[in-house]
Amino acid sequence: MKVLPTSIAGVAVIDTDRRQDARGSFARLFCAGELSQVVGERRIVQINHSRTAARGSVRGLHFQHPPHAEMKLVRCLRGRVWDVAVDLRAGSPTFLRWHAEELAADNDRMLVVPEGCAHGFQVLEADSELLYLHTAAYRADAEGGVDARDPALAIAWPLPVDGLSARDAQHPPLGPGFRGIAA
Image 1: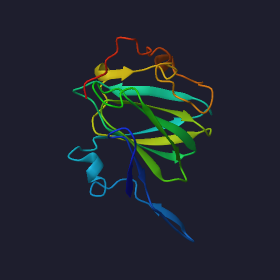
Image 2: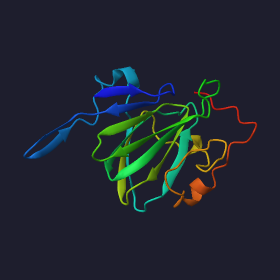
Image 3: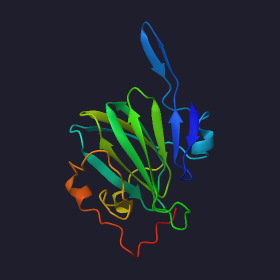
């Protein structure tokens, strides 16, 4: 596994080596030792799986407020998605900047989304599936969200934003008074 930092502190891309032979392939999805520089002393406490049927659909942007903030490690198991992390950390030098990566079943990449960053993705190929590793369990009372179409973020979604859930469509845009969240 290779850790590739991005321009946003804590947001990283993990490249995985897939081994192939006549039988098929093998790839390591997670290794605490190899990812210790990213995960540190955190533990993976929850693993989730999503399937999104329609191309163009957007899920997110989601985060959890402290003290239940979480790091996510996101990998595409089927299809292709455009995965986005947005820095919402108060005082961060990259506050309100975003980083996106195409994650695909065949590119063996994973995106690391640290605490204080919102996460969302757009489906580039129908019936895409993601695997999420979380360092904190989901808490409904700690949930936060930002409108994926917020002009203050100016996320360059590759396709028109479509298929938002009722909940995601109601996430507020960031107002002029938004100063960030504590990480």
